[in-house]
Length: 166
Image (cartoon, rainbow, N blue to C red; front, side, top):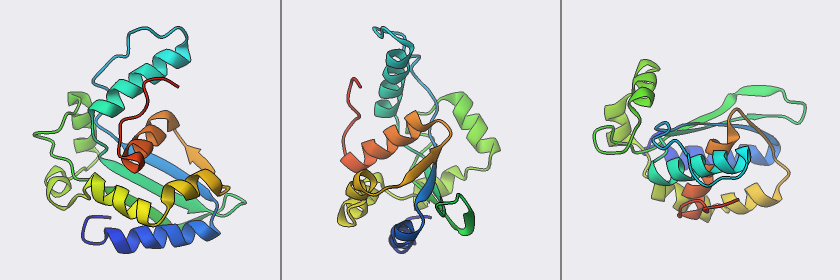
């Protein structure tokens, strides 16, 4: 989804989420620009510190959702890919991530011009109580590396950086 069809598609996603309770989430982000070496006392603290630094210092590029029923059976018509406004020439991005995403087909010019502003996504999510639904509805979340997926999503929805510690 791009800025021109964002509102209509976001409403369709939220409507479908009422029926389909399994939601896969995936993000494309600008890679890791910080190594996270710091004060963490455990592997979990070190991983979160790295996530905290990277998420707070970069912008999300794409956010995808795919819905399935409670038995885990997906519906091919229930997938959304939200493309956020991102300027590869001005926004922070790891060179390796840029190469990988370019080879994967990211259209950087379209991302810059037609991408959804993150504040618009946050505004519409707030109008439709998306964060509250995430917290209270019994959604089965499916993810690959969920730490970053949910960190970026919460950063956008809460309109603030993620907390410094767990």
